[in-house]
Amino acid sequence: MIANVRVIILAAGSSKRFGKQKLRERLPGGNTVLDETILQVKLAVSEAIIMTNSEIHSSLRDQSVRFTVCPDANLGMGATLAYGIKQVQTANACLVCLADMPFIKPTTYRTLAASLTVDNIVVPVFNGKQGNPVGFGKRFFDDIMQLNGDAGGRSLLLLHPDSIQRVEVDDPAILYDIDTPEDLEKYAHINS
Image (cartoon, rainbow, N blue to C red):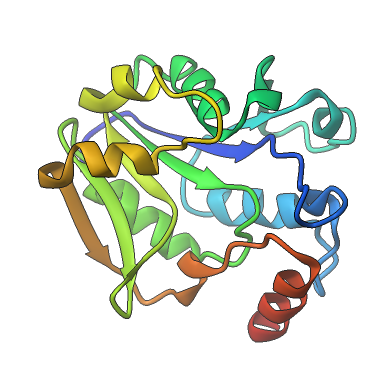
């Protein structure tokens, strides 16, 4: 494992498909979707930066994590990710986590972080399907900073297929992206 791997949690989306702010929705254990994601990440890594928008930021209570408001969050995930990478320029690699994936195991985060180098892109795989989070070595930071709109880091996978390291994980939650109330109910039921 290389030194100085940082973690960004993207939590700036508008939740249009959900119909209301999904990150504030409660899970069966009592935590919100965002709080549970942060908890699982913090069990794996010592520090994470949560990239958010002003609406979500105003409702946050956890002062033990670093929240950064992206001024261009309304432009989409690509713009938020680009802004987030600017915050971790001294890192050798960065693991990019999605705030609406609260069921990923801490061991998965640790495994992916340990697989990162300055020159690779790390993608988790479960039963042949690629999921999230995705990690990027420093070599790709300049490309990420050029992202905008809703084009997230996945576009870099198409540009750099030879740099991708697929990491098999025993964690189906890498595929559990909560976009609708039905997704939340289904995945919460699976994980309860």
